[in-house]
Length: 360
Image (cartoon, rainbow, N blue to C red; front, side, top):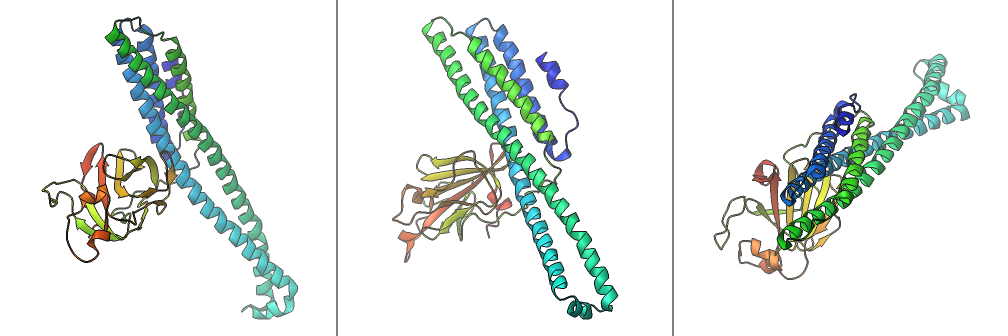
């Protein structure tokens, strides 16, 4: 019944939302299949395999939600800018009409066609104001729809993250029971939670169909650099220790601000190994922009940020652990120089940053 319901879901989806809706439907189908496998599992190994499929379904669902929230954020920015322009036009028209009303005789003399031309122009302006107000009201309605969709998708993302944590714990518990040769945990709670998440993903796929029509903005390459600086070492170039990395090293001033070169979702923001602070920015599905070596971050995982958003700042003190990334060049002020590591991952594998950023 679950699979049949998935096939009968809303088919008329706007072109801009097709990919997100299809990803959500695919994730729901994966969870439905995993639920069937989990219910039918008789041994511990079957349980682990079914729970692994559940994890994959959750991850796919979260990918759909990240994409959906990016679409919502981009359309909100575009609609808000359009609404502001419409409201400014209405205010300007009303100002002109008010001025004509205050001193009609003087205004009539200013029109090149004389009084008749001035009267006709005033009538056109009077007709234009209600039309502009109607356009502004339509934009407000679209923004209200987007706000409701965002609430649905943010709530769904929180549910899926919680569900993913729960399933990973369940998988660990089954594996532990296998190792200890003890009785397997009861699967009923896992199945109940799983079926609820399937319903959540169905609601998410329907929410994509409500997105106002909008052209998806392409990712314009090359992207601007995330920080003001100079190229210290290009992708694949060996450092002083002979180590080659797929990313690029940028030399920056202490305290330099790191900004988003493109709008996207923050997948991670925090410490990682000896790279100081690291940010993973997902501008579109399957692509991660990696920035490492910051001293402060201003964003957190799950945030959707626009291009140019303030993400982090470089350190302003003596060199830290991340300074091992630089080439060790000597010179005045070298001890104060900071370095930002910039990397790109496409489909989980390193991509050449010089094809994505204006490095030269």
